Structure formats: C-alpha cells, structure tokens
Image (cartoon, rainbow, N blue to C red; front, side, top):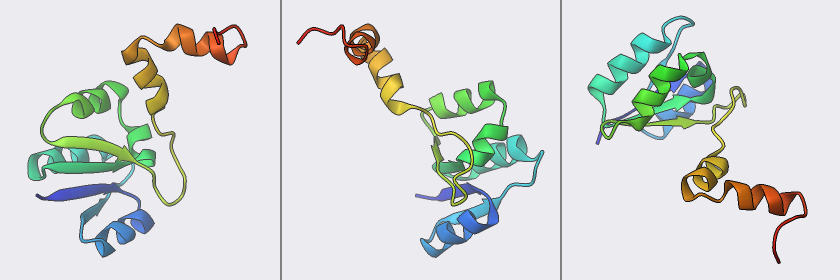
Length: 109
C-alpha cells in the first residue's frame, strides 16, 4: 500500500525516515497537492497545518471518501487544529445532550 504525507519540510523528513513518501506543500498549492496525492496513493496523510489551509468543503469531501483514505495528522510544529474526534463520536452516537448535562453538573448519576 502506498502512503503519501503532505506537510512541512521538518514533518516530511520524519515521515521519510519511516518509509512514507513525503511531499512538502507550498502555500497556495494545497488543493493541487491533495488531488495529486489522492490519485497516486491508497493512504494520504495531511498535516494539520496544510489541512487548515484547504477549503473546508474540499477536505470534508476528501475525508469522507472510501478510497483513498485521507487523514489529518499533527505536524511537528504543533500548527493547525486537529478535529475533535470525541465530540464527533458523541454527536454520531446521540450523546451530545447527555454529555453536556453531565459536564454542567446536571447529569444523572
């Protein structure tokens, strides 16, 4: 399985050491880099800083696809916000109201 990492130079160097093909993404080239990686690999790892510069609809569509798998990963600089997977899971399971009530001290015990 071929994997491609899209991100900054320092993070790309770490992924290269792990045997992953790594590509640096120039500002403004995020959408083209993502499209090229999706055409070439079964797994595309996108640094959070690159994901933050992509149009939200494009990233959402790429992440929702079955193949290739597209995942947002942290970069070495700690740049870019990662998705709140816990909140997403609670929403999908219908636990949002219960979780919010428990956090505010009104939950059932």
